[in-house]
Structures are given as structure tokens and as C-alpha cells.
Length: 138
Image (cartoon, rainbow, N blue to C red; front, side):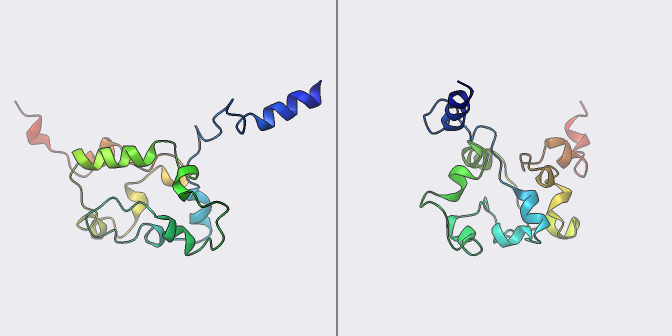
């Protein structure tokens, strides 16, 4: 009976009974500890755009992917790509002017990356440098 329960639990995601990717995040920490810098995967960061890694970016290091599916379909937060695209449609932001200010340290704004949390900066991070006090003066 116990063996059957363990077998069912281990196969639950394959059977569609449990979404094993629901809490999956990209393992940024693992890549950082391996010495992989942000621009290795997020190329063209000084130019406007989303800078999400493509399968070809992943294949520069991972020469034998285990499936033909896009890497970020499994190795990223569920819905993360869609949220990034939606955010980009409503938020004007360019990394280029910010990179010299933060001395090329992506972690200055993307605080959650080393903990494998959502990499999108919170508005409070932006406001730590950009107070926009005039917007609050009535």
C-alpha cells in the first residue's frame, strides 16, 4: 500500500494530477555560482527589449538539451514570459542608461535573482533612486 502511494505521488505530474512546474523558477543562483554573468544569457542588455534568453542562448552552454521544447517552458516561472511581455507593453524602461549608474551590477535592481525569486524589480527599488517627489506634491 505504501509503495503504491509513493508510486502514485511520484507519477502525479506525469498523470496530470499535480503541476510540478507551478513553483518552478529559473535557477539563477546555480548559474551565478558557476560564474555565468547575466549578459551571457541576457544578451544586448544595453539595447531596448525584453532580453529573455532563447533556446539558442541556452544551447551555447547546454549542448544536449533533454527535449526539443523551448527551455523556458519548463525552466522558468509558469507564466513568467507572458508577464514580462505584458509589463514591457506598459512600462518604458531601458537598461542602457542605468548600467553605468549601478556599475554594471544587475543585482542592484534585480534583488530576487540570487534567491531564484521573480527577477522583476519592485517599484520601491526604482523609487530608491528616482523619488519623483513632484508627482506627490498637490
